[in-house]
Length: 271
Image (tube, rainbow, N blue to C red; front, side, top):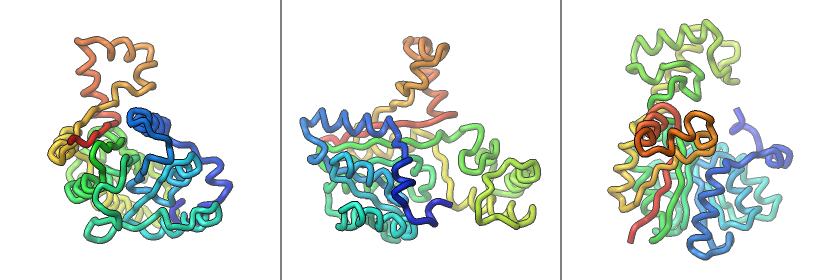
């Protein structure tokens, strides 16, 4: 998997940023009348730091944190090579704390991270602590009831209780070739692969209703706005676009997207 490899110049040159994240970050900077260099950004769940490095190249004061030291250590050499030697990537402690002061960041982003968080309260508490007054953030993650689990590529496995039935469905998917074919399962037999994927489904993915995440952010003093309905893919859709813009069907389509497709939310620190 990529996190096991050093981040290289060639890989970074081919890296494509998430356009929605960049758009919201630029909107935030404009709303505050700031240049890129005046906005301090944190990528929570940064991996090897490709997005952090991209932001630095655009002039932002960007940092990244991750719970896994391996990808962080595999990303830092390229930062140093490009002239960013101050260790902009760091590891989150076992207690869920980062090394930064209260209110250190103006804008915090996560991209397909929150579905991997087992203790949502701990993570959002720390994000709340780190966000400055008037600061904000943008968070995107798969919806709770997406039909196909996006990491295992298996339909409905995450809908099932974490027991024998889920394992049986995973086994059937592997038998039919519906699996992610991770490097670490090469050479394993059917039962061994099933156990690896089953363990991953229990220990590394935690889907929640979008309302749960909204309420936690609100408790921490954030205003929450869902942007999934404004996604260009929805707005440009020949059928969904016009319907989504109506007052009658718009809310229903929004609920369907937030429940079965993808969640995009913008948060703004109040006070």
